[in-house]
Amino acid sequence: MSETLIPNLQKEKIIEYLSEGKRLDGRRVEDYRDIEVEMGISKNAESSVRVKIGKTEVLAGVKLGIAVPYPDSPDEGTLMTSAELHPLSSQEFEIGKPGIDSIEIARVIDRGIRESGLIDVKKLCIKEGEKVWQVFLDIFTINDDGNLLDVAGLAGLIAIGNAKIPIYNEKEGKIDYETPAKDHLPINEDVASFNMTFHKIGNSIVADVSKEEEAISDYRLSIAMGDNKGEPRITAMQKGKSGAISAEDMENILKLAEDKWKELFPKIKKYAFGK
Image 1 (cartoon, rainbow, N blue to C red):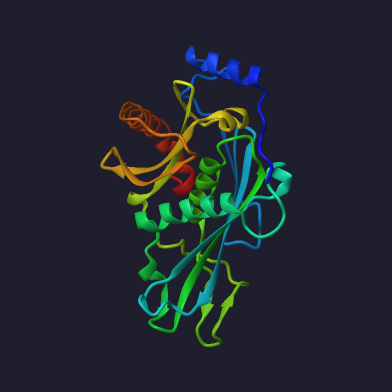
Image 2: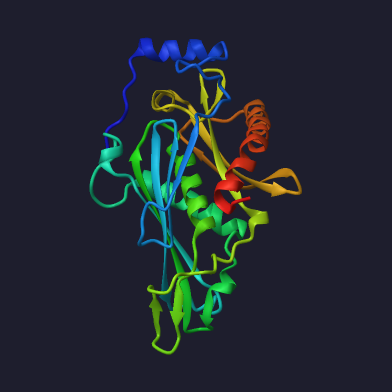
């Protein structure tokens, strides 16, 4: 996989702007780019969505199938999350088996959904010990212009929140795709969380980084936050890159994450659950 190389002069200019609270694209250090959401892009999926934040674009789809439950959870459905970082979205991505970046994105998104308890997996049981619904969440990148993890996580949340369970014909033992599905996935909206990633660049903590900003950051910290009676609660956290996080940086990141959650969560909840 190739790396994005940033000329020293451009790197110095980015850091200089950030030190003044500005960015090359006109945003402040804490600003997200505009969020665009398009639903129903695939007629064959239980739900599908296209999400854009700035020029970073991701597709996500949910498909359900019948599976044998795991021996240690015979009455629970299962979740499988995959992420494909396609070369058309970035020169850094290559065709072939999943690389470390795609594995990380899939695992972070999967953990955010699984550990928060967003899906009531017990309600996905058809016959204990024999048949359960398996939820497949597939992420596909279209364009990577920075902050791919947040865009992919948002697409996954919206796809899960809008998915419906197809009709299962117990007599014939197969899924009836001809009859329109009525029931949504069993979702606990109260525990829904979404991911926000912050980068340390120079002396600044930056939200929703561009591709160039991402390439020169010292570290990144992704925080998934959900609702706790109107206040944010952390459901998952993931650090990336080699830089060390100081106590002061952590305090600043948590404060910024709380502020952005209060700004973004009402919009994201509406996209995911229609309310």
